Image (cartoon, rainbow, N blue to C red; front, side):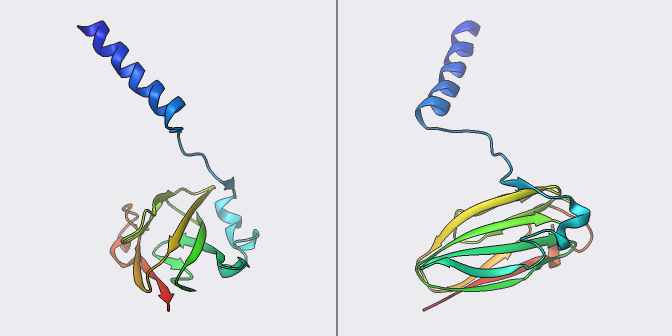
Length: 144
Ligand code: CUA
């Protein structure tokens, strides 16, 4: 029974990796935490249109805020978030979306989300990062 369970577990992993393309997340890039504010693109955080309907949002996570803490895009936009930490591990979670990532010092976290519905989406840090953790939030404003 032990061997059967072991083999079925290995089989499940194989199906996930080969069949469904599951993989361990890897950093989209690296940046020295001490130099974040002088290293492109984090020396100029904010949102910019990279092609029609597609935006890049460069965000620094730090104790205890996101810089910038609000971005605005029109409805129907696809936004690629590039986030890094200037100090400790933070979280990057946007309500009512698939965006749920860790932000690790030294690494760049990249996640893409399409915003079809206009409205305000709360962005929160969901990794405990110290005494001001509960104040670490921002928002994505999707306009009509
Ligand atoms: Cu940053 Cu919790």
